[in-house]
Amino acid sequence: MLISMATFEHLPVRVGGLAEAVTSLGEALSKRENVMIFMPAHGLLQDDDGSFTHKPVKYCDFRIMVGDRIFPVTVYNTERKGVRIFLFSNEVLDHQQVYQPRDMFIAKMVHFTKAVPGLINIMLKKEQQKPDVIHINDWHCVFAGGLVKKYFKIPFVFTIHRLCRERISVHELNEVNLSELVDTRYLEGDMFNIEKFGGHHSDYLTTVSYSYLNEEWRTFFSTFEGKTTYVWNGTDSEFWNPELLEHANLSRKERRKLILKENGLDDGILFFNVGRLDAEQKGIDVLLKAFEMIMTGEVPGSDQVKEKMRLILLGSGDHHLENEARRLEHQFPENMKTIIAYLGRETTREYYGASDFCLVPSNFEPFGLVQLEAMCMECIPIGSRVGGINDTILDLHDFPEESTGRLVPPRNSVALARAMVEMTQISLLNDQFQQLDKMRRRGREHVIKNFNWDKAAERYIQVYKNMATIKLPFVSYAEPY
Ligand code: NHF
Image (tube, rainbow, N blue to C red):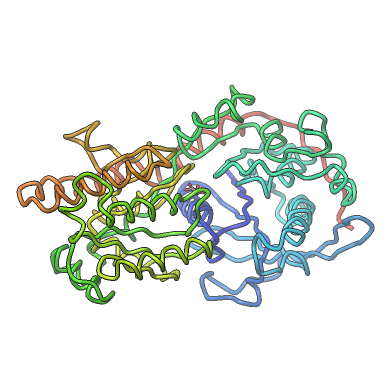
């Protein structure tokens, strides 16, 4: 089976979890089937960091028409870990920032929409083959999926990694001569709902967790009942492995002491948060409030444990939140450290491997990779009861014997603060410490067993195959210009 996946992110281009998900899924699928990735070049051709097996080589060029202008497109081909990668390049598709500024991003989406069928058309001639399925990841690639299905009768799977409710005006679509996509079913006033278009046109609609599917059932997914399902992401437990830590030979407590010292803090119970500092999705404001409430003694039991609590925040993003984190660090210099940076996967692994708990206070989270990475690294997650966090963490109070972490209601600083106090109390009692050690080990086992990419790939193949068995006549796409 020849599987094609269209995406705006694939390593080394990474903005968020989408890159990790698509890259890992592609690799896992390629162990069983042939996989090709379609992605805008995003400046990668100028900035090759050596992550491909060989330098991208020109595969073909053709022209596309956008409005009244004709643009050349060159497609380069390379490989990464057994996956063929096609990078689409021209003055728009080469723009380095993936999603910004908005005008450029929309232009990129339009060029990509037109270029993907162009490539398939040439592939048919050069290789006498076309993909059996096109797997569209998030709304940016939906129109490409629509055209590929329309002109090549290739079934399309649409995976929503996060609902964005993105709209585009009918006028904008007309201007770039994509009015053939407009259909009154997706019109909201004179705006066109892109995800609804994807939902209607796809043969299968998937999202990345059972809880997210349910949370958004009434607002979106129920419209597509009958062809909607979920496929959990996985995580790379070979990379997220405590044996690979720099001080793997030391105990967790000793590693913690070292990392706290590096950050100018004395030993204590370490809470860690990593990722984008963002209030809308990641709930960092909730976390900062919870920490402040503990430190100012507003939460029952906090006075007894607060001196022992340490918080390290690693990430960057919203400037207001960065300032708020700095303010708290200033106010509680013995308890908190803020690292406004992205330190790379290896260094992040060291933090997971030294922290007692990892905080994942998202307001919503379609899947969420952090809690899985934490569990893989035997760091206990304390997360919101939403989306993929809810699906992957087994809560201490719900499942005392099988638990792998703590779940708290979202958008609730008091509940989070209470859970942090509770877990600190447990950590400070020696006999309870063993209970936590068991939880750490169970967490890693739970992820390896249930959330691995091979499992995800197997399920996606089922999804693809259901469709791929549908025999559709081939209709040729217009000749390249
Ligand atoms: O893990 C990859 C990621 C998810 O929850 C995450 C999100 C975007 O918001 O599927 O996509």
